[in-house]
Structures are given as structure tokens and as C-alpha cells.
Image 1 (cartoon, rainbow, N blue to C red):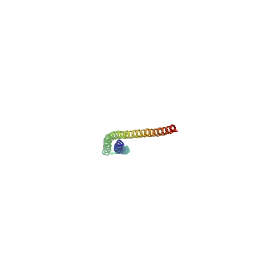
Image 2: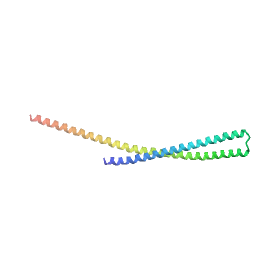
Image 3: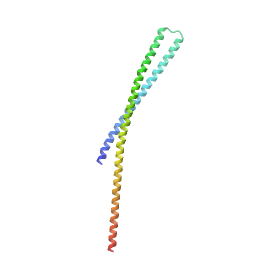
Image 4: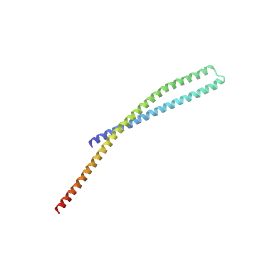
Length: 152
């Protein structure tokens, strides 16, 4: 019983750690999604400028304007490359947080299985004690009945 109280305290700590790890993992996944959305916005923004540049180049456009478009598109590409590196880091971090969550969940499950094992052992011990008590009562009644028969 005292051991179970200790295990229950440990289980509470494991549950809290698991909850924290799960929240951290969810935040990591959310950061990846936000970064992916930013990358998508950059790609669509770049496409808008490419289309605009194509339209203006089909007509008469001065070289300065064309170079400005090219420079801006190159800048968008550099930003997208940096964002891809950030995204890779966020994905790696999310994977690490997932691993940590899975580990804390496994730790909690181990403690729960120990508590369940102890509960089953207690039930088996109680069943054995009850069976022994029943056997003792039956034996006692049979002994009394035998004594009564021998007196008669």
C-alpha cells in the first residue's frame, strides 16, 4: 500500500511531464505549420511579381524597371531560402519534441502497469485469504459435526 502511494505520486509527476511534453510538441507542430504558411505566401507573392514582370516586359518596359523586378524577385528567393532553413530546424525540433513526448508517455504507462500489477496481486492475495477463511470455517463446522456425531 505504501509502495502504491509512492507510485501514485510518481504517476502524477509522469502525467504532468507527459502533458507538458505533449503541449511542447503541439507548439512545435504549430510553428512548422506557420513557417510552411509563410513559405507559401512568399511563393505566391513571388508568382504575382513574376506575372507582373512578364506582363510589363511584353509591353515596353525600361531596363531600370525590369532590373528592379529582377532584384526584388531575387530578394524574395533569398528570403525563401532562409525560411526553408528555419523550417528544417523547426521540423527537426518538432521531431525531437515528439520523441520526448513518446518517452514521457511510455514512462507513465510503465508506472500504470506497475500499479495494475500490484492491484492484481492484492486481489489475488485477498482471494487466497478469503478462500482460506472459507476453508477454515467449513473445516470447523465439519469438525463440530463430527464431534456431535461421536457424542450421540
